[in-house]
Image (tube, rainbow, N blue to C red; front, side, top):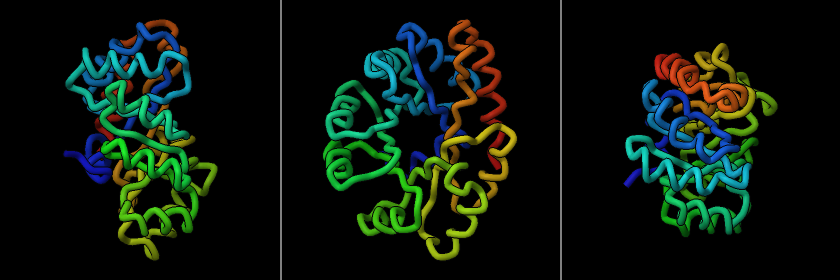
Length: 208
């Protein structure tokens, strides 16, 4: 069974995907997989998100589909029931953390401060989401906390671009990064899945 640490090794970039039209779910996943990206964090920010997760889990078994923006215990259970293979939270409360653990799924809990990261480490969690990355100090911040928190690895997400991605990936305490640029809104609206595949291929080549 995968662990949170394993999630950081699936791809240099974990696409953060927003699906507004459920019919875009499968072709988006297929395009990402075709470009060499084998994982998706599909956010629960639209009414069709859970159905999109279910369709991808069923129809694109080659990709690891996770649910992001988990902010409540109900969402954790709903995402697990829909077929999500892992969960991602933007932050953590005790109640949310307990609910996510109860699903039995691997997960990346969100942290933005040293205290939050230390608190999660006390629960035995060493693979974390750093969010919002750029707004919280970005590369300089992650570099500075690597010394006092050597046992933690992060998936920074939020404001990262293809240009800044290599600098994040060069940090010893970064396992992968989250990026929304692989599935831009205008590309999905235009059903331009060839563009998505091209962006995925560029992202897959970023591993350092």
